[in-house]
Amino acid sequence: MRKLKSKLASRLGETLVETLVSILIVALASVAFLSMSLASGNVNFSAEKMNAQLRSELTIAETGDGETPGRAYIDGIGYNVYYSGGNGTLTSYTDAEAVG
Image (cartoon, rainbow, N blue to C red):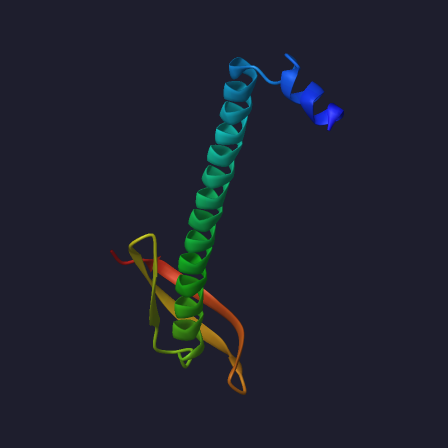
């Protein structure tokens, strides 16, 4: 009981400034974490978009017969893509000049 009374009567403890500084530190850390999370989400979105475009271009290239060009769009520019390979697998493909 005496210990509790001495703690209550004590003048030692956190000041208002210390409390505000600790709250500021926690707030800044939270903002940093949020911005990192948002940046990570943007990178994932961009990667998914580029992967979908690559898959589309490869599908176009693989469905060609080596004589008739497929169309692939890279950065909005259309390319004629010629498939060469065998047994339904993509061995290689070449692009012709950009056609607009």
